[in-house]
Image (cartoon, rainbow, N blue to C red; front, side, top):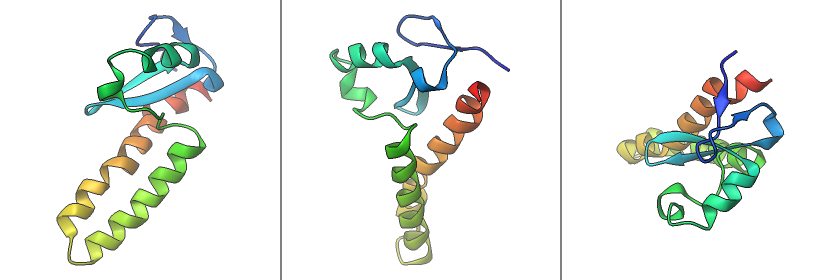
Length: 103
């Protein structure tokens, strides 16, 4: 089990319910729930995005993106389908490398 630390306060995150995972360009960032709220009020919001990739909304978004990617790959827009696969692959990576450690 590896330790997971908040990007803002550098404290260890020990509870899955207090974990917020976001993407920052092509990297995955972890925050405490309260630190994420503070980060939304700063300039980092331009690059961070306004919604976490973990939780119910992140899961639904990843499933819908996967379905859309499969439709595009099997249709005439294969390259666009590969680009859309970024969303579910980042969600899977976040679960495998971070969330799974807290279960």
